[in-house]
Amino acid sequence: MSDLTKRKLTLLDGGIGRELKRIGAPFSQPLWSAQALLEAPHYVTQAHENFIQAGAEIITVNSYACVPFHLGESGYQQQGGELARQAAIIARDVANKASHPVQVAGSLPPPLGSYRPDLFEQQQALDILTTLFTAQDEHVDLWLAETIASIEEAHAVADVLKDSTKPCYYAFTLSDELGETARLRSGESVSAAIDAMLTQTNQTNALHIKDSDGIFFNCSVPEVMEQAIRVTTSLLEKHHRPLNVGAYANSFVPITQGHEANLTTQGSRHLSPEEYLVFAKKWQELGANIIGGCCGIEPSHIQALAEWKQTR
Image (cartoon, rainbow, N blue to C red; front, side, top):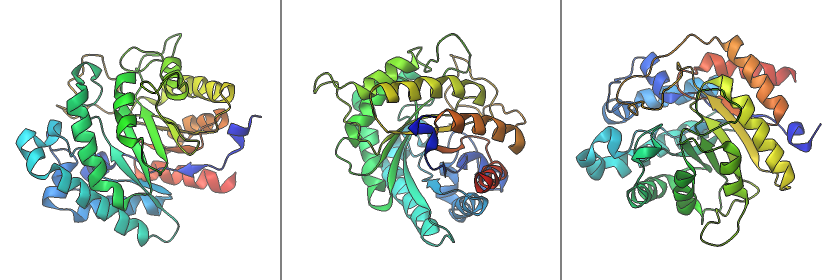
């Protein structure tokens, strides 16, 4: 058994957007999870509390939709940063009141739309990511860069996080199609992405990854996580880097390459807590030490993980 598989397991929360919808918060496209921040922030508090009561040890700031893609350009310019700040304050307050230790992860979402690396534009992305970083930094314990679809996106978010002394977790979204090679939604291989994270050949390409940082996989179907985690733990051992490894899958039906990036509510499938736990056990066995859920993974799924953790 490698050192990576011996590490303490930490539980991340589940998907806050779908949880807001489940508990009756105002929720519609294109605003998505930002609508509750605008109209009924007490639902955001409730969603965080639900995941903490289920056993989550890290909660994620509800800032994923505080971007032009969801708010519109005018809405983002007027209140994107302030909404992200409010979301971070809510998460911090809930974590501080929790009955067990809970960390707050600041969320850096895809600045130009989820699952669509073809829409990425670096300077615009950097401007948005910097705004969200500044808005949340005072209130968070660590950073979670979410749903990274390409190596280019990883470089952009790493540039924003390069001076942070807090742990920074980089979560890549994977192609939902199982093949011979684990791939990002850009088509780039997971091994190429990990090499880009770990191999600092020159200052231009260096990503400044600290040992307290992590490589995660998120917002992909659970079936594709295992292959990516295998590649990651193998490369971490090769490079002698004890980074955190995380996984938080969704309960979506597979997303196609031409998906319209959150313009509609993505179709879901039934994935029971017991079924999700089977996947999570395998991820932990392969070296993942931080596990939670993304869209459609509810407090009941996190509770199943917490009950399993107590018996380990």
